[in-house]
Length: 106
Image (cartoon, rainbow, N blue to C red; front, side):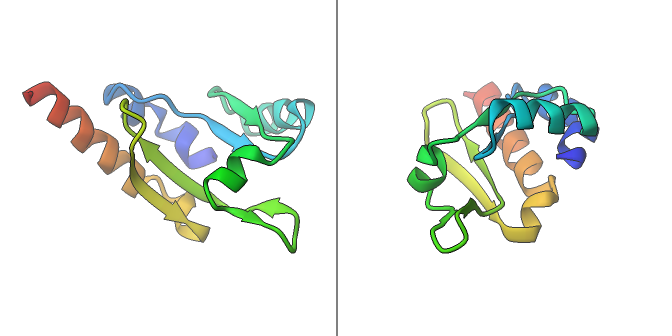
């Protein structure tokens, strides 16, 4: 989250909306965002709908696995990072930049 916040300008420059999703409560997400200084929205998936739909819910542990998804404006997943690599913004930022340039040349 900190890396995405630190480089939020890269995403804004490519007309990208960044947000986080957590199975924690809205209150817990708000407190977490405050502690980290995150300005983008942190959404609560308290019913585990999103993490299940995206295939990142760990049934045994009862938590959502760390993942980053880049979804284009047509709702198509263009990029996925899972696990510890999802902390690094490089893949997501590069994909957003490519999608932005594709749109500009069309």
